[in-house]
Image (cartoon, rainbow over all chains, first blue to last red; front, side):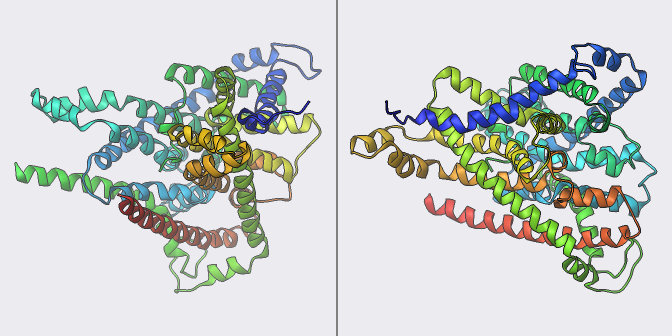
Length: 262
Length: 271
């Protein structure tokens, strides 16, 4: 029997790739998370994780760092995206590009540049948490600006006109028209910034003088000593990400914060 | 009223300028000092190309730069082929397959990179692959391919489906119709997917450090190790990174601005 070519079959290589290198690894860490050193089923890692005060305090610190980073990033990115999206200047795409360009210099070199700046000012090793948050805001800012810019720009001009016709001043128009309509961009920006702020330990290592431990660093440390505990933390993160994705309605390609559609 | 409008305009421009200045301050600082004969920022010296000469004369650094570029090119190329085929297959699949595959394809995008990296590294050890150039390449393909799918998908949705049917009616084989009719319609998405894959691969640290062989270094792992595990030569190595950052910055700024200017002209022409 000759197998007829159908266009659907083009997805077979990618499906196999996803199965072996995405699905199977997730199952592997799930197995490691719920087994002990002899590979017997156990809730031990789960219990140990939630009964250790030092672990829990690290998590709380990490959450606070991520929260502060996300709020600051949003407070900077929203006005930038709003001003650019609503401006009439022809150069606005070039200006937007200027905000994205630093993102294309190697990530670690960029963090190193901030490290040099902080060392020059005299803050390196002195203000570890400030430096870490500064570095995260700096590095993740474009991920927040892009989705916001895209959603604000898509808002139909007639909404603003309608608001003005109905007697809304610029404040009411912003809070009752622009802000609600740009919420999808805000949500997508928040997810793009919050998760890396909890997990990207390159920033906290290089700028926090190795004194700031975030959840990502935790996993990194356990990768060297205890795969079962490392996997447990990874699985907990996985569940958090999964739930928050369900709540925010999933990832949308139009708001691709990596700039795929620039 | 006019004065108020002008004041608001100035305030907006000032805000944008201020944030841009903050964004470029660390890079400009390194760019200035990359031309100064000193190993410490803040210590002024004479104008010189010392750091550039040191950078271009260091075979270890040159090797890791070429490693990074070659890896990015290979990973992007393979991801683009795999991702474009994947996007086509997903687009033509029935509902259930479509939902399952696009769901699985999103996992590496929404997942924390450290989780992807840890899961992959453990799996490679468990199945006996260990760490090699092959595992590194797979790691980078996992980061890049889903983004290729994301860039190609919108173009498929905008595509005129009847052209493919017309090609078949006129006697083209399915392969010929795909290459001759479908591919030209989605090629902008394929190219932007490729470019995105390159930048993602060049930028990566975490997955790279979990899947690479210990003797292999990219720019990311080399710079991280140099700053975190300092030794006697640290100051010297770190100052050569000033030159590297400056070179990359100038190249990237040049390429993006040039692309934007020519791209803008093309758009005007089609109008």
